[in-house]
Image (cartoon, rainbow over all chains, first blue to last red; front, top):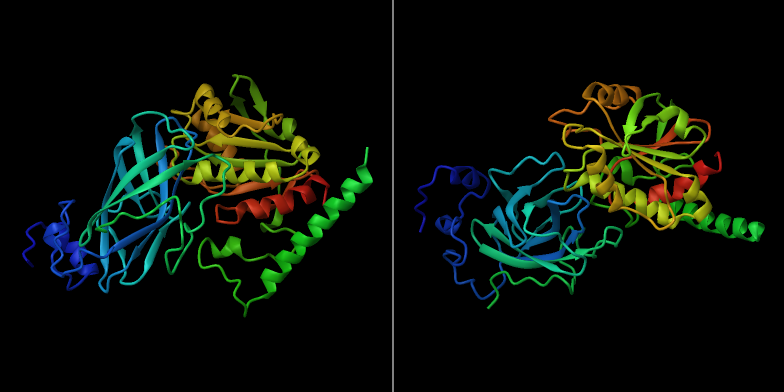
Length: 181
Length: 218
């Protein structure tokens, strides 16, 4: 399972050297990791939220991803149930991450205001406080990781956990469903 | 009516805030260090403000733009003598712009009503091609606070927007306004900004600490 035909994956290989099973990266649903780890959550998502947008047609999703595995994984792209386009931005200058964002082994990466987010554009409908939005993150190794982000009020405090830097903290409103059985 | 008591209460609140700031600022060997956000903005400054001090203080800039109802708005004249937040951004912005405005709004909600009532929040678009008066008005409406009328949205010709940024001494925005200064200035009663802010996870705390000071001419 080390055959990787797509040239764009080369960049990920640099960052995540030695990772096997990259062929599954572009195909959500069935993680093609070689190991027998499908019964554990490879990627845990905490502290997810969306602040009600002031702009009518775009919004940012904030969250923390924790890689529970012993290997780095790479967040490649995102899909949203709330709009036509979802783009991964890993810095406030909103550069699209063509090579993905590496999440080191046993570590987390937080997407927080001014520090990165998934931007949803061309919203299907205005977002209302209290509703939830389905988000899928696509990882090179872990495949599709689906979670639910609540929409909070424009002046509501951000859920705790979004700033977690070392470990996922309890976040009742944003359970991870990434790959769990 | 109970002005003295309110003042006393507020002094107590301020004292506790200051104490908090001092505690976190001096606890360099403790567990206070935050691993997220801007280091520049997360550290406590040595002065009386929680935001970062401007050295030297920056005068209230002089520029003329158009407000959301289409009226000419002369910034220096119409904001003179009032605590004024000034921020440049654009409405079609998912992250820093709305977060910064929400931080300002949360600070306004946290300060006493008389301080809030004196304070103006002036948002100047860096993307005048998209941000017409009605677009900015709709965007600002999302941040509205009951009984508060101090949000001002400004647009104008590209040349006028650039002149405003130059007058405020922020870098002229590029990339159709999308790459712009993230700095928020807070001008005071003396018509100088002694303190400014950038987006971080404690921006609101800094603002709500500083605004009553600035509103009191301190």
